[in-house]
Length: 128
Image (cartoon, rainbow, N blue to C red; front, side):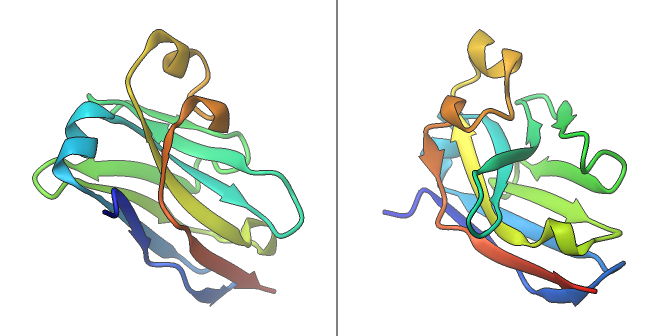
């Protein structure tokens, strides 16, 4: 079964906006409530973008602080990433991930090693 399913990726021009969504099944959303967005540009390593804990507190990579907003809708078991002022360097495959809310996760929520459930990804392409 699909535990996490991303959507919303698209091709946009620089300066544009997109909203990514990640729908989770109920079991995953309840038991792995600490969630995050990661991205992986072609040929590069996966990097953390933004994370959110059960209570809605957000954590951001410096590269997206002030441009991206992570949020969640508990009534829909859905995670979002609102992206604005997009730049070509934001081009990547974006992945949703979930993890149990442990102390280790809070220490480094943007470390891909600390998430254990992943979606299949959605592509974001930003042209100049």
